[in-house]
Length: 298
Image (cartoon, rainbow, N blue to C red; front, side, top):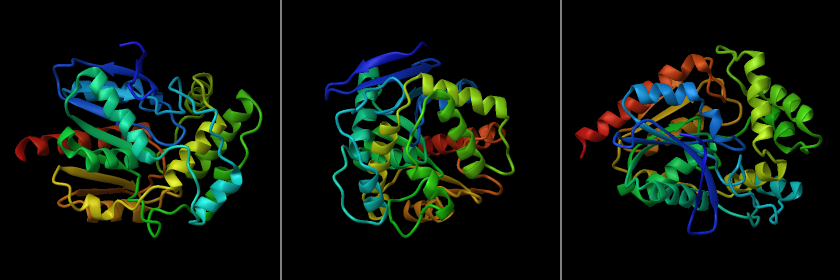
């Protein structure tokens, strides 16, 4: 289905797409910081359809064609404070982003869904499961963390890239994206350069803004520690993390899996902080496997 806009009751517009039959179980795909829904590629969504799922992907607020909170700037100084653990006033929190997802499901008439999220999207997915567990059939949390600052931390080499000012236009954005991909990507699963350029160009053209990324970062750095709440979940969960992740240390994935009762943990040698084409099957197998576990627990 072509892109559509959901005008949500709380005043946020969310751009989304659906794939497959609405009669099949729904998988809600939640993308990470600064990433539009297209980072869940058509090929990835197509493989989920082949496994018998109805797929929903969407642009988080401040991403792609969804609502931009341009009247709520976040200063670099505030982000530095947040990285250091000092309190700041974020324009919105991860709970607000989870509310967007629930409102989108309401818009689509989907009562409950299997939820998979990567990085910040994994944090949002965890928040969904905690706040409304009756609406989350299963959880797949990929390269994410619990919100506990002692785990899932960034490698120091990533700080300059995270805090660098977003100057210039399309060409500069593409160049920064390629540099970032080389820094945090998967050494064992390289992405074709032409594919990386095309993705960066599409991301920029669909409405990327540095200010939106800063607001995402503010939401991430002000998140609550979900460890105790994750321990109360009774839904099936799988946690996936790469052993070479420099943006969210694998300690975050391990802590998430330890926190959730009976969670499966999958660690992948050579995987960094991205979704390589070579690992699509691994991720989709995990989503399907976790979804099937929900059938036996209900």
